[in-house]
Image 1 (tube, rainbow, N blue to C red):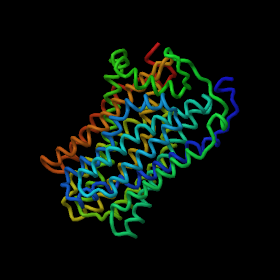
Image 2: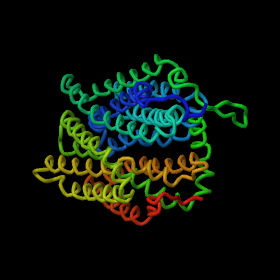
Image 3: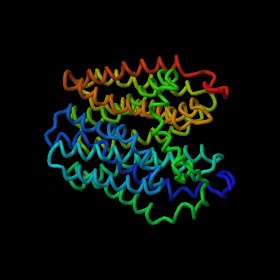
Image 4: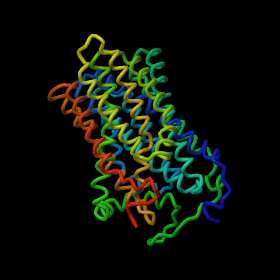
Length: 422
């Protein structure tokens, strides 16, 4: 029986994939806004706090390659389970950290866990969701992730208000990730819930599901794919890296900016929560715009909005109304980022060779993650050498360059149903 012939209902993945994803993303959403404040309370400078915040993204980049090997060896479900447990270890370490170094180790472990969990989740959907339902399932999964990123900060704000310490918010993620692992552990075997998936035998004699093979190919074919598709990846991989750079800098800079202008940890979490709600409200509209009018109509306006928002923010740090400007710019950045929801995955799917997409997608994702990891570190370096305002302005300039490159390089013929590969 093929994947498309197996009986399937979309709501059947709600508990097995959507619930663990929601819990994991709620946990991440709870800690990301308060990492700079925790680092500052432990004695870190503003620049060091920025570096520590960016270690989640660096951990994801480092975890990209081994995550494919892990998923292909132990399976999607167990990979998600162990990733959630690794996140528990990392966040518990951060929660009890006595100094910035121990905090950094814990945050880096969370990044590694995020890389494994994300790829395993994607592989699970590939294995158990038939092709004709897959786009809807992945779109719903993206919505679930964004729901978690705006629920988490509100929970963090409540915990900080009740306990009086920002480090207490880390225990929200401990509970959420433990709940995610327990959910995966107590559920029946996926083959019983969805039917036994088709599998293939590899050259070394191993039996692998479609998702496990996808995970393995994304990791093992990385270098070869970069060589084979160098021209396309040089153009669109670079733009993916710039999009990732703007998004990660936004996630790191907003909490860091709040610390620098004296916004309390509770208020910062509430502001980030509202920002996440705005993004969540736009994820479906973004897909509609891409499908009806083309990818360029979400990608370019999104980058222009992000770049312009950072440039405006750069001139507001020392104003009397700095907090008002901070909230206003945060909302503009949320609208811009929400408009671009799903653009990287969509462009990757458009560009990938239809006969063997996994290695290309792995290389494309790696380049995007490289930008995601490198940009906050560069931003922290500029903050240390000059000021956080100059860092924001530089990021804004990079965003406008990225908008031009997207306008220049997004293939217009993608919207007519063809691909740049034969």
